[in-house]
Image (cartoon, rainbow, N blue to C red; front, side, top):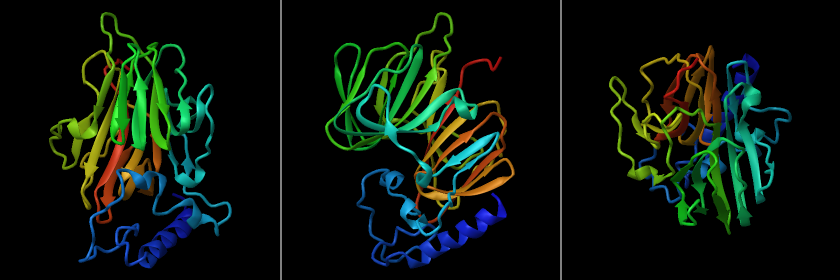
Length: 302
């Protein structure tokens, strides 16, 4: 991060931490734990749409944003998100966070559905993964079966499969789409589930908790991981690999290293990581960090 940006953002984060309302001890970005902390009564992932360092906190800093775009990574923060009507959707607004314009082979975007919202189909040969951040959506699949997707539920819809997402109240989704890379003799299936039903996966040499939301088998050319870090935990491996990543921080805060840059991050921040960019994460604060991570898998990079 440039020294000028650090000079602006770090004092601002410190100011937020020490001026948070004492009656809301969980609000500070780096606040000290309280002996009288109360359980968080807010719904899952509410910080994604109500971040501690919200766009309103930056109104007195005209032109300032924490967002960064570089050749091999990008950090897209809530004050930079631009929502507009999604093509062929009804009563829905979307903000594209990652797209091929950045160099990725996938898209990642937020969707705000409203009363009488209806989705459109993705483009030809494009598979879709939907994760519900807030509210509830109905998924009508190719067989006409309706599935209720509440917060923390997800659905994978194979390419060229008819389906419809609909909602009659405020619902926030994050969607990943990728043009499917077929493998002869292998065909993916529709997957519907919830995070809490997914088993923990062993992570030798690491301390974080890992859940994989899609099967690891050959038909699937990407996976979505849920990764949990307790305060003070960090990645032991400083990763450099051919895979691309799209990340949305769902809970907590920390420091993300991307290349030679070190970024303070919080719930609601999105990150794109190009192949071979050095990457590392450490969780800060007093609450769990959780992020949702796209990763391409099961295909030869050639």
